[in-house]
Length: 336
Image (cartoon, rainbow, N blue to C red; front, side):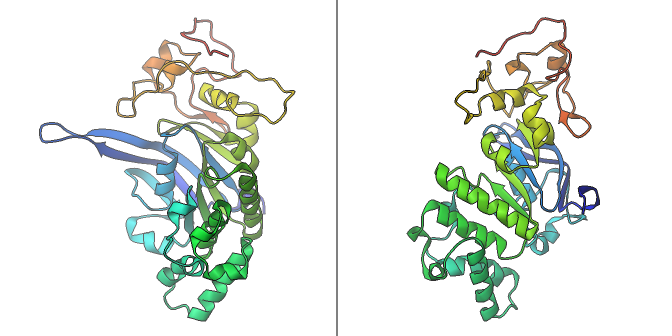
């Protein structure tokens, strides 16, 4: 079936999440916009990667999609059904999450078999015990674990094995979407490749959709179909992996890609070192939030906020990369 005929597993429309920060007896709290105006959809069997610096809103977006937090604005639809808090319990089996640190996300007091079985106990209380155990053992085999691991504790496993346990726990309810929040960043490089290959194999077998949260563009290049680049809570570029990596349109995306290590020792690249300070998320200036760090900035950038424009490959930039250069002098330049 072609992508045009597939229905998205999850669709976000102008999704946002604000927090009240600070405040006291004589002062009002400030508003922090962790996510602002996020719109995307994820098809079955496809991977949408969300990338950006720490603090850009990636993990907050993951918590919104997994219904851990309620959005401040916008809508979230799962399977074509608009999600409200009253629907959370019935929809959580459709969307599951795998966290960054498996050692922190697993209960060290329980055996592996019970850890994987627990979602079934909570969400399918009428399921017979023997059927639950059979399902757990089936999932353990699917993620590459041996039968004797069933009665062991998480501290007896390596980081990569613990992440397999976390993936098995997420899969036991047969979800349609997995949110992967930095799933390999806490692992050694050799183990990262094993977990990534496992995720790719599981996606092909089960037709899973992935929302892949990462700051590592070399990992994203390996697993993603589409990419959204976020900066201070907003999407600044989106498109297919091929478009974003081969022809980045937003200066911030170009700077991120320039910092990505390359395996070819004969290749040459110029590192773009951004100048200026990252604005406070509590006091984002008017206009483009990237303006004070951008080497293409002009007066219009400081006065107006660019919209995320384009067909499939979109960029929130008045003077995108690859377009004709403006004749006005620029404010600063990247340092190689």
